[in-house]
Image 1 (cartoon, rainbow, N blue to C red):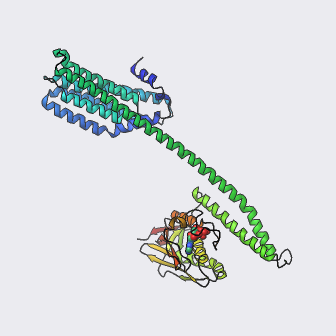
Image 2: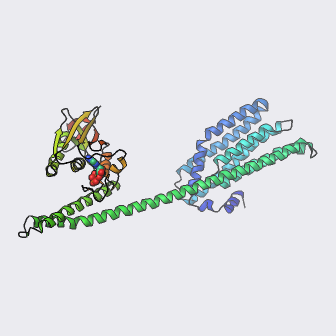
Image 3: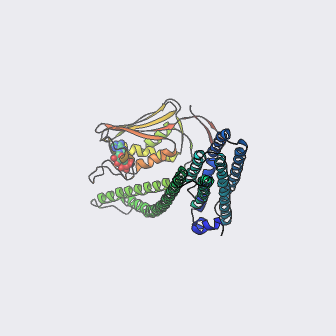
Length: 469
Ligand code: ADP
């Protein structure tokens, strides 16, 4: 059984575990990343020791170390091209890692032993410290693969013992000699290196376990989100169809298509119609939310004049405003104020801001919609003189299903979804929304878009847009 087979025996998961590819890739990634660091240290060690010892032998061994580095670089290329699917390729790469490790560790050990052999006096301080550095380096950066680390450390360990035994065999000193003290110190250092290697390895394994757990959790969350999204979509679609026919039928009856209604039935039908509308808008909001979250909402961007957008939204809100006794005023922009956007969705945004401003206002008050250019941006603001929003309510205002006054006795209806959807739509437009408000005085919601200019008409519907400076 060769060394590689022994390691395979000890850790059968090397070739079978799911983390194998990840470990090999991580090993190679770090080996590549640290190549200059390693080379720098080898060169520095060579230059330093060449000054004091035989330079020719030192640079010869250094050359061999560099050769093993070249082999590693070559291996790195093969490993990067491996996609993890072919287990045979994986085995081959692993085998090459093991062979390269033996070659590189032997070359480094030989480089260091060569220095130790050239020292006449006892106390191989320099080579031993080189070995300690090489061992700690390996423990720090090779801990992804315990077998490979063990292989390298075993070779370094043998070199340690060899250096420790040089003087013992040279001088055969009595046990009281400091040469033996050095020998025991080396054994102690070896134990220390083994200990930190284990620590690094267990730390790495622990980290891998957490990563695997996080991945699993992430997968579970994704699946749950997908189920929720599908559920929302199916329920909303299933609700929408019958609801549309209920609303239509109610409307027909209310208009007297089924004959004259008794007076006491009319208010009941009005309530039913109102609540069906509320239900329908909830279903629409849910569908929009689901589409936005699933990335299924389509946005076809075209140049839009912000004044036109506001005009369209104000016209469609006028009926609702006059029913509640609110006046809507507009202040249009006098310079070009074009933005790029999906008209239908931006009208939806404006409708939401306007209907909020109207429904949270007292009868007789005014809502002002303003369009202005601010530097390279176009700002649309909707200002009301309504109830206002208490400080620190931002999360509630823009949250899902959240309302500042969520009590059962709140006067106005709503789903608490409108501004969340609005914010998401604006986000897709690279636009922002914010508000300023004072309780009892009123609120101003404003949205800001990049201003575009130079819209050249092109054949068909396409327009070429350049951003305003
Ligand atoms: P809703 O369907 O409840 O209107 P929105 O997401 O549009 O949901 O708004 C969330 C909450 O933000 C509202 O319930 C309200 O508490 C607050 N809000 C939004 N606009 C205004 C406004 N113009 N004046 C006062 N409060 C507002």
